[in-house]
Image (cartoon, rainbow over all chains, first blue to last red; front, side, top):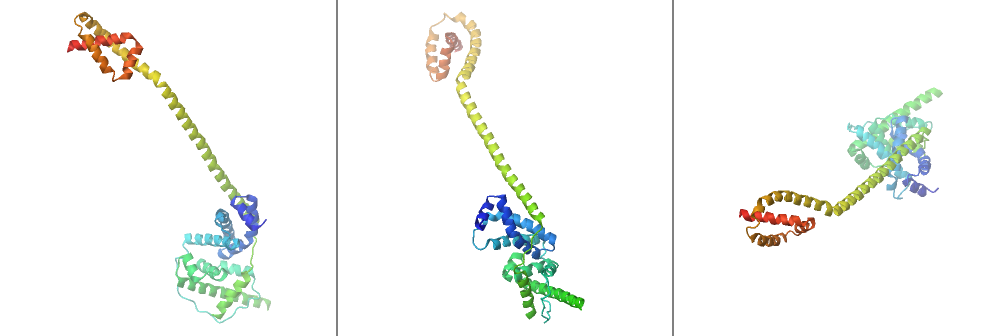
Length: 180
Length: 152
């Protein structure tokens, strides 16, 4: 079935079409959820709620741009809404941390490990990092989406990158030691 | 800043085509939630339908009742009026007994009857009722009038 047809059937609450669309979208959306959530379990919850929201709002999709991109935005907005409700953005740290000149050797880094260290970031760092680095939002857009200053968004990103870099380095050091 | 770009590039490249298949139970949960929503959506129209049927019954019932009561207005109202007349009769009978003695007195009452009939023309319905019910009523009225005249 063509995607357009599938979407049209989903607007009529056709269960079979919904299941087909789910299996088409779920792997990509679950990847998004894993990056934006604190844990695997939370990612699963966010995926379920996000997909339900996609089906609920599917009639609002106007065939402009990719459906996948639209569904992704719906899910991301849902996750951000959850964090907004939890008021995780109220703590503001404006100081930009010092950065080392060390470059990262990424050859040995697995995607599971990267997902894990993203999830372990403080909420506001994780969200800003994901929005800016993974999903190409500008600091201005992020500031609007999260209800923070542009400066805060920039400093949160810098802090997130510093933490991630440290974790990757310590991991690669560990693996180097281990191989020796 | 160079390593920052590297970190960004590292994550972008690694996650570029990243896909993760969620556990099977996720779809089961979503499917059951979708079913719940469908049931809720179905329930609402049923209520609308039922309330619509109920409303139409009430309207039809009201119309029938209204129509019937309109038809009945002629007979029950007449009976009411005759009852009133009857009451008048009973009263007037007593009055008749009082006035009978004076029957022969004058011719004035008859003139008054004509007057009173002229008056009653204004109340068409009452006048008709009197005629319908029986002539005695009229005679009673005569006596009534006589009585009134006497008072004068």
